[in-house]
Image 1 (cartoon, rainbow, N blue to C red):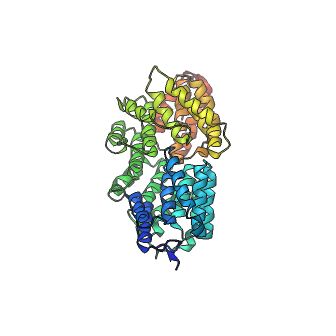
Image 2 (cartoon, rainbow, N blue to C red):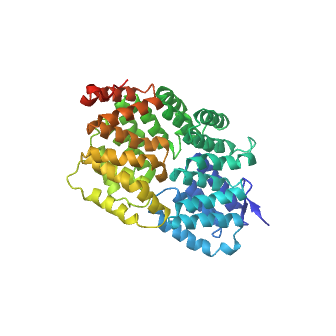
Image 3 (cartoon, one colour):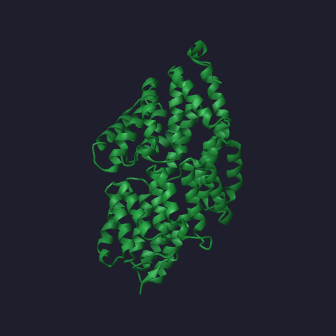
Length: 452
């Protein structure tokens, strides 16, 4: 007898208790509620041969984007090898994605999950993992279109439907469809107010449009829904800190860092990245963050680098900002990336095309070589999406470029860049502040242009 999970996709297990636990784990994962890993471990304990249970566990480790996950992925693949003959087509598709990721063929993993979804649009687990893979790879159109492919197979009668709408809202936002993204995100939340990803998608719209006060109100009002018992809360708090920072409220941003963003013991890579990104934005404005930088740099000292270059960018921020006279870690990080760039897997391509240039630019900025930082960032930012993250996260490169142009005295570049920023965020207090600084540059005053 073939069993199906609660969402309508087939499993090869004949243990209903395991399938029920799998359903619960999947629902927790959709809302980023704690703790899907514990729930899936219970499913595997009930049925050690539960193929989708092992595949689910592997997917959780994949999307952590950490090198430490590789050993566990290989262990799971070894377990799955003994059960592959009894697996169904859906499960073999998941195995293909796991094998690709374990081989650092990240794009191959994304496409393997996509193929599973084409064959079975009710595979909500494949949808979640595909969506996270597309996010990690900066595949904006697939963040939008992969969800669009499966939406007609779902309806409001499905409890999971709002989560799909939240994913679609985020994809729409990343593709610049801001009005549709906001509408879709709000619809998702009207059906499921606790969807932290939908709250996040609408916050992204406000961020990209410079609607800072609306962003503050949106996240502050919604915190009662997305912050309690949620593993994604730190990132929404990060977005709230960005709104405060854009408004010039440095103290509020630091308060959020200390109470909600600062990495706890045994942090995940994305928590560390948010912390580094916020501190770097404060660093660009000359804010004193005390010992926070050194605390975070110490965490990155023990981090394995040259695995996922988006993480390496944030590691270099901590090494560049701490001002340590010993540059060994900065050199070691660069050397690790240079070594990995010679590979043929998709990770190596990400390092060559984006990761290594970005790390070199941040290192140059930290050393006060602003001209080099400007030259590198002007070039690499055109293809920066290739190493993952969101438009809001990668905006730190634009902010660094603009700051480097100002500090390096490149008035023409600074004026062009601040004009560009004003077009996107015409009412931003930060933009007004940047204009005042650019206007004060001697070359601007001498007539290359006047900041409006």
